[in-house]
Length: 339
Image (tube, rainbow, N blue to C red; front, side):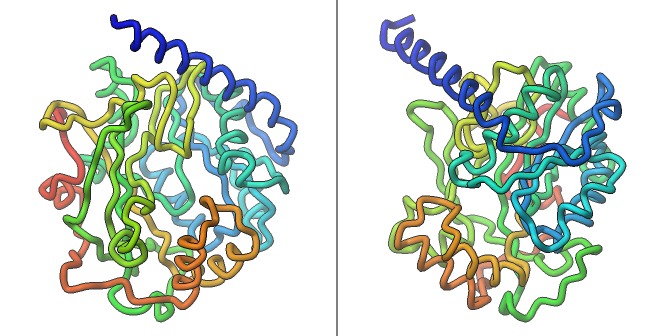
């Protein structure tokens, strides 16, 4: 191994330790409300999420992931005022913590979730997602997460990559009528099929993917500032592991090697992004005051101002969502060697 590689490995090892120490220091920022550790068995697949005012999505979010085989949910509620906390506290398969501390200063919730993963995730397959992300993968209509993780275990694979696919309606966001108990994809059933670009991150070695509707509509003048779409949401957890930036990057870096760029044998998934429901309009208004997301540059201020108007994101190049087979055919996810 080259000296430069050894020095980089040394730097990354100490960076990971600093993140773990930060997570340990931040543990007092979350307060337990309803914790059910006895519900977590050795083979339970866990789901971790930080939420704020997500009652428009949580009923179906829970239904979706229960069907996929999540055995227990661990939520951190960040000062919701729409009934989110009360709703989650009575779910029999969920544990709940609350906090009023800064989402931005917690590394967008990853410090809080990191402490819960440290305590409860070791040895488990752990899914870390936002409330507006619905995971799908090859054969998701007939095989659950137990089947998927068994396939990964058999191949010695400890992390699954996924591209975030941004869904939107045909017509103005402001015109959508959405029932929280129903699948949001009934309303958000269009996506951009082809405008994606990728590069390899020089430090963390993850594939950095950008594109999609937000890139097309909101970041045409500064495409390099468009949101990152590649994530590592599903991981066989070890207490020494840590997320670096949301779920885009992890340490150790080997966990980021989740995409085969040359058509290899790795299975990958897609996170169906249900951000563009009508509640995005008041949330965007609020974000311009709270300033808890991104770097709050003028570029993102303009982005939230546009979203607050409930724009029409559809274009003649948009593609209607049909299911996982379509996403595989388009090259947005891969079956790998899973047959």
